[in-house]
Length: 341
Ligand SMILES: Nc1ncnc2c1ncn2[C@@H]1O[C@H](COP(=O)(O)OP(=O)(O)OP(=O)(O)O)[C@@H](O)[C@H]1O
Image 1 (cartoon, rainbow, N blue to C red):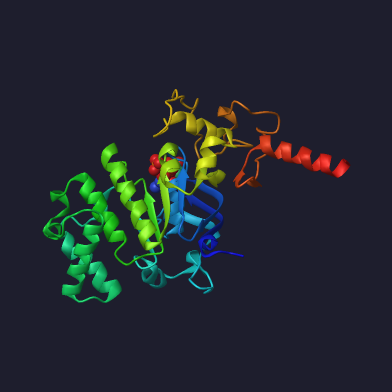
Image 2 (cartoon, helix red, strand yellow):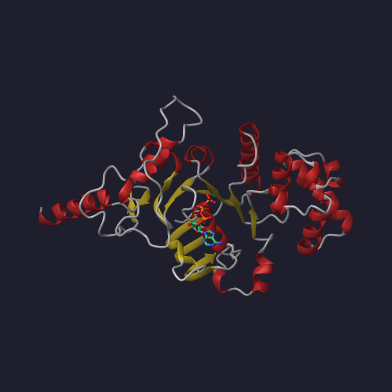
């Protein structure tokens, strides 16, 4: 039986996004399939330039030219069995109705998200009055409560963004994202601009609010160790594709894809015994012309005969999925033995 927790909120299928800035476009997202369950935190991790931001801006329909979503579907599932809608087919007007109320986005730079010439109170009340139909007085009261949820005193409603510390600004943006109690909050590197102590504090607050309010989170970062702490499941991206997904802890203790293993070595664990940090040799490929076969093969210590010729598909493996010939060969042999025995 499907429990409420296992209901999908978002199903991404066959998503392709290209930047048509030159004759040879950048294939930033190449055939991504992903599922986000209701109430879960899905982490998306990968090195800079692998397509994480492009993926979430396309999913939330915030992409700007020269980015074009060339194929795929993004199903947003309603509550209580309501039929899903494909976000990619919605008009701007239909999308406007979903923004803030169903889907909210927190970007890396809080300074860009907050309007520099408006006091916080005016920004919160604008969203609350437009989307929730609150009166000015009700909106300001609610805005004070929302700031309180992220540990900011209500009198800060009178402040402008530049009068707040970096951490406070980022927390205010998170409070604004939660203003209309959305089902999905997308966070793109939301804590890179703040120090580590503030980062931990913000992430703890987000986890607590998620438990209290029950929204789902897509959290993007290049730091796998951070995701192990906060995500339920993780999707690892490399060169525009998802190469592994799985429960967060399993992905850290038993990575299936050599790239996940390499990423794990590149970030020290936040807890537990210290480990030597090992960089990943080489650099990611350019995304205009992808290498043939598995895009990671030129950097992979385990590469073998098929890797530079055929692209491994993402296949179910244990509690997750991996796109690697190592496992596909093992699976193929198991299938073969099962057939002949
Ligand atoms: N406006 C643009 N025009 C052309 N190419 C772009 C544009 N924006 C991004 N790209 C390219 O698309 C690819 C994916 O970029 P994207 O920003 O999605 O990656 P990312 O994983 O989010 O990186 P980061 O962690 O640095 O934000 C990269 O090769 C990048 O150079």
